[in-house]
Amino acid sequence: MLDAAWKEYDATASWRQRRLRDKQKQNPGRKYISVNIDWSKVKFRDETEWPRIAEDMADGAAQAQDQNDSGHGEDSQMADFGRAQSSVLFQTKFTNNTLFDQEYTMKTEKTTRSSATTEIETSYTRGIEMSCNLKTPGEIFEANCGFTRELSLTNNETESIETELTWGVESLIKVKPEHIAFAQLVVNEKKYNGDFTITSRIKGYLSVEFRDVKEKVPSTFTVHNIAKVVEEHMQMKKRIGEPIEFAEVKDGVVIIRTKGTCNFRFGIRQEVVVNQVPLTGKK
Image (cartoon, rainbow, N blue to C red; front, side, top):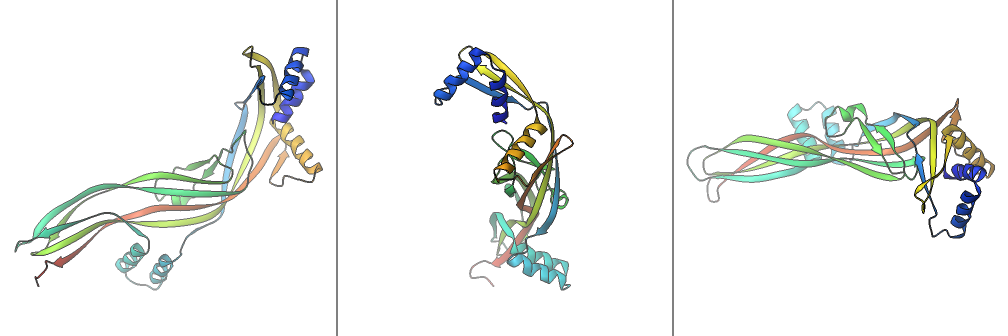
């Protein structure tokens, strides 16, 4: 983009502007002209497709799924699945030294992090960084696990997006006479992975302001059709044997396809697990 802007600057520059330009070339370590690109007149529209999205059934979770398919009872299924992918957020114990049942209240609030880690295979950049919107898969968004409807990708390689999710519990725990109760707040997690394609459609005009740093006033403006600039750049890359396969220009619209993978991890369910054992020396 800057190459096209400088080309236009050189073609229309006054004698004084050309002089500044020559100084800039001769002293690259010193700034004579500042450049500002205005994207406000350029429209972006992103659409996401998920050719593949699946639950990660590795390790113990796969075993739990096999048990689910075999027709075991629901309680057994959930217990096994919880042990396979569970995290203990809080634990405490209650001691009953009396000969009567005692009731205790367990009240706590803890926070976990839901994460989405993306890895881009093909992409483009807007200015110095990419900024396109990845639409969250429906089944993950509807799980209400902290993800927004769209995730903004601002890195053209690998990026991890995290959100916080708060879990609260207030449980009444009855402890048998001469027993100790161990109570845990457990959160069960799921993992998903998938392949995505973001189709970005871009059209409009951008303006570039060249400013004399010393005078602190605009030196000149250039205006560019984004489709024309991208098409000329793609033609140049093709001539030198480096074609851009993931982009095209059609009817004045730039169409770019960003492909990558994403791994999701998030909590889906909380439970309070209580185990009781007799006091030492008691039967």
